[in-house]
Image (cartoon, rainbow, N blue to C red; front, side):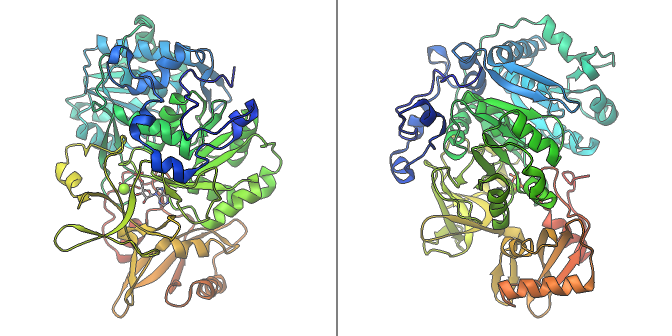
Length: 598
Ligand code: ATP
Ligand code: MG
């Protein structure tokens, strides 16, 4: 059953479209008048779209995502449609999800887990992961997801940092990755195993996840939850160094909910697919919380990227809103448009991307392949939710991250010697992207690293570590990570601009640009490129690419050197690791590679 208006949708809110018919209700973009909504927006008003716990007992993410729908008209609607690797399809209605997550919450209670204890999960995208996440949130313990492809050492490091009390994992992941390090984890009291094919397991020192769920009642009353109570511990991608554990609170749900609506244009009848793994923040904020608080149906695909499989999912499950990442888009571009044209994707209404800069070429390709552009948006693990976006009701500016969400003040700043910041108000001036603290999904700390947290703030701003520009119309343009920006012959070059030009060349699949130390220029621009199928590295192609880039960028900005690589090093969340290319180029230690794609 699809398309029931959730009880909680307050149609009078200024960001909701003015509707005259059911079709309008399903498709007219939210945030139709950016300026006026932005002017009048308040977080209290956004909070009013949510229910809150009964009897004024506070605000709990799982209540907003599951309980209030399960007990209302959406009870029998599919909340999660799970697509297994081998073709299985399982639907979980809101009511069923409520029952299963109650069982998990009572299981935690039975195990002596209390508010604030850390419950980690190490699993692929399987239903049990979603049950664990929402059951943990109901019980007011901290949900801490790990990416299932991590090896034993990154797993040990994160479980130790977070002092995990409970770990939910699968039998095979446990045997391959955890059994060998178990005795180094004195805080880990309970390991709950999901047996292969959900068979009972018999591994000493573990308990069976499904048996526990069967033994525990499906009735659970969420305890009082202060919006400031800790809810999620998310590790960053480790693109720039050792991953940090960013702590988020239950009140973040206000931002998850409203950004889903405003930036991803959620409408009540939407079928939404977020391709990110919950091991990364996108897969939790938008792969679990935001679509469920908005009462949508979420697609969860267990398998990894495969262009044909993905287009099949979009078509067969009638996905209307799709949230993915530049790395996947570039892989689809590599395959070409002929394949996608074989599918009927008319129901796909809104496409969005996050995680890395989205090259203008990729936006244009979206138009060609899907008849709709990808809408780039920007945020970080630390911000908990989308902060800057291209919106459904506005034309996309290819290459731009868009404009700040209502309720978010973003600026371009420069640190001063006195430890404050100077705001750079002139348009098109490069500086550090900064945000005024105070939105609900703002991180509340780096786990056990108060100093590192403190260093993120200056002069009343949160400093993001990214360099960007703002144009005269208020659109933000990503330049590069502060550590990746290249200083050459007295000016600053953002790698993104150079990479975007290189991938316009027909032979180039992906590009990464670094600054290579140079005695004269300080740094020179060096590019690493991987080629599309059917193209081979050669000196002739190298010269062609150098000339191609010079003609478009000018000699000062174009790369001076180009190296070919079969693939570029990336994090497991799909981000190009420029720091690794640089370390390798300079023969320096590679640093923390725990999140490097294997
Ligand atoms: P670490 O902080 O450990 O180095 P990370 O910054 O990659 O890892 P995440 O929080 O997952 O960890 O990623 C956020 C970063 O990703 C942003 O700070 C930005 O550099 C990049 N990013 C995300 N979305 C965009 C976007 N739309 N355009 C450009 N960059 C983006
Ligand atoms: Mg970061």
